[in-house]
Image 1 (cartoon, rainbow, N blue to C red):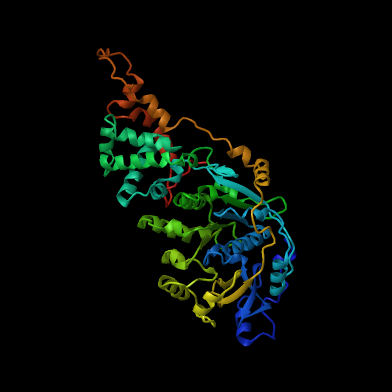
Image 2 (image 1 turned 90 degrees about the vertical axis):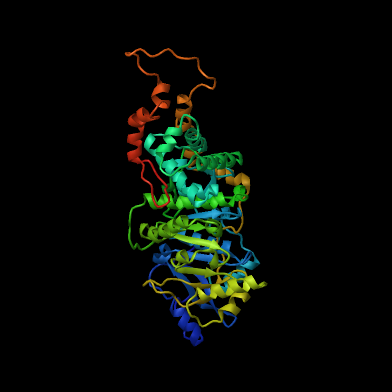
Length: 520
C-alpha cells in the first residue's frame, strides 16, 4: 500500500479555515500514534479533505460495528480497513459471505469513480494487492478446507447448529462429557451419532442411567437431529485435519499481515451453520492465545459478517458465552467487528463493547424501519448532527463514524466520506483463485481429509453381531473374557476408559463455549 496509508497527507486535526463545529469534530481525530485513515469529514453537505477521520491502531482490539442497509458500502468499508491493517502488519480474518472480497489480493483498477472519490477526500490513490489466504468451510468452494472436530466444536455451538432447545443443549453437554471421560474421541458427526445411538440402545441403557439428567427420549431427539443434519450434507465440515486457528496470525515475508478470506457463498443456504462456525473460530482463538494486555496494535482483527444470524434464536447460555468471549478476547490482542444491517441486530450486552462504529445509511420506509432508525440514533453519543436526518440521507460510501480515541474516550460523531480501497473491488476469477489455493503452504496440511480410528470405529468393533449369536457355553474359570464382554458387558467401557479414556479425559478442557483442544 502507498505511504499514505500510514501517514495520511491530510492534516489530521483540520485547518483553521474549517467551520468552528467541523474544526472541533476534526480535532477529536488528531491522534499522535499510528491510525487507519477512513476518509474526510462531511459538514453541511461539503466534504472537507483537510479534516481526516481515522481510527487509532491501538484501539482496534476494542471491537467494532459496521452497519447499514444493503448496498450502502459495508463490504468496501471492510476492505478499506482490512488492507490498511495488513499494511500495518496486523493479520485480518474476513468472512466473505457474498464472494466478492477475494479481490483484496490484487491491485485495484483505476476508473472515473475512484479518481473522483480520491479527489474529493484529498487522498492519493495507488493500486495495491495484499497477501491473502483463501479458505472454505469443509472444502465447499475454492479455498483450503477449514474443518473442526466435533469434540473441539463442543456441545454449546453444536446445539445452536442443531437448533436444540435449552434442555436438549444441556443433555448434549452430558453426552460430550460422557465421551470425554470414556476415551471416545468425537472427530466427525458419525462418531457423535454412534455414541448417542449406543446410549439409546439396549446395550447402553445402563450407561444412560448413569448420566444424570439425560432421558432416553431426549437422547433420541438429539440422535434424530444429528441424522437429519448429516443427511443435509453437513458432514464435510467436521473432521480432520482440524484447522489450526493460529494460522490466522501469520505475517508475510515483507511484514504485512496476511488476510485470511473465508469463502462462504457455497454455504449461503446454511446461514446458521456458517455463523456458528465463525464463532467456533473465535472461541478457539480465545482458548489458545495468551494474555497480552493493552498492546500498541492487535494481533488479529476478525470481521464477522451477517452477524444477526449468530444471535437469532440463540439460547441465554449461548448469548452469555458470546458476551464473555468478546469481552475477554480483547486482552489477547484480538479485535472483533460485527457486520450487520442495524445495531439492534446485536444484543445490548455485546453492543456495549463495540467502541468503534461505522454506520452507513439506513432506510426508513416502514414503521419498523423508523423504529430501527430511532434505536440506532440512541446508540450514538450526543452529536452536532441531526442523526435521524443524516442517516437516511447518506450516499453510497458515506458513513457516520465514532471510534475510541487513544485514551479510550469516544470521539465526536463524524459524518464521513470514505476513501476507496486500493485493492480490487470485486472477486478474482475462479481459475486464479484455484491457483492461489494450490500454491498456498496451507494446502498440503489441510486439503486431504483424514478418517482415523475414533468413537465410531471403537463402538463398531465392540458392538454385538447383527444376528443373535448362538447360546454360549459357560466360560471356564480360567478363561479370559472376550473383548465384546469387556466392552459391552456390564459396566460398558470400563476397561476402555481405564486404558484410554482417563488419559484423554485429563487432556480435554472445555472453554466458555464448551469448545476443546487436545494439548498441542
